[in-house]
Length: 215
Image: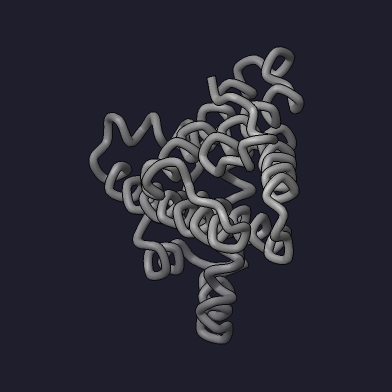
């Protein structure tokens, strides 16, 4: 494929389609090679574009990687919210959420590894941190909104401030991803789901007669 052939699709295709193809190819390349060894030119060529298409749509490698992680997290949250939107029984909501998030954690095909790699880079690199920070904030804000919606629909009151509840749930989920990757035999699906159920039950308490202790 010559340079003109590579450039022509970006002129013909809608911007959203260009972004979609770049994201799909980038997700494949990052999962296969990791962040450090993935090259912008290879991602662009695999999607049928020049690397200029990556820079014009995402600004660079960090922003592209952040978009993949952010889109994945947003899609997961949207799927969970869709699954529980018609449920108004609190135990059913908690059970369904715990089951769905557990499935995502234990069946993850590399997304968790990439998230760990990106977070580790952010600790040492300011540019990476500038991408990661707003993405993590958006994820926590989404979790807070979801907790508020569940509380309103089921008629319960969260035990703590929504932002704190979202932070706890966000950190627990990320921690479970890390522990499952490190020790999948001990931190298996049953263990993950039990941890999620425990925290959700403490954040959104069941009626006193049914509520297990949080300790």
